Every structure is written in structure tokens, then in C-alpha cells.
Length: 78
Image (cartoon, rainbow, N blue to C red; front, side, top):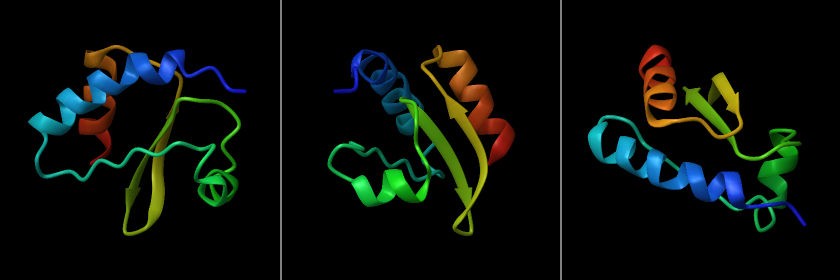
């Protein structure tokens, strides 16, 4: 079973950024429940974040990060 610790650390950070960046759609999923999605994106490590534009991945980030790092990454890629 995959440890959910880093995901639990990242969740409030992403929720805060989601509240601040209302022009961006945020989606979260449990890869154990969404096996088809995890296979499609070849997810091997969690947490894993993706930024998609027009249905295509433009950036991805693996692992938990702090608020400033995640926020800057999103702003640089949207």
C-alpha cells in the first residue's frame, strides 16, 4: 500500500492555492481508486501534480513541496 503521508501534507497547501487562484481548475484523485488515470499518466510516485493545458501535460511535479514552491510552479506554468 502506498503511504499517503506526503499527499496529506500537500492537500492543505493545494487547497489554499485553489482558493486563491480562482481562474485555475484543481482536481485531486486517489490513484488506488482511479487506476485507469494512474495508468494513463504512468504515475509511479505520489504525490504527483500535473498542469494540463488543452488536455496536454505542460508540467509535472513529483513529491510534496511547501506553499511557496507549489504556488510559484503553478504560476510559472499557467
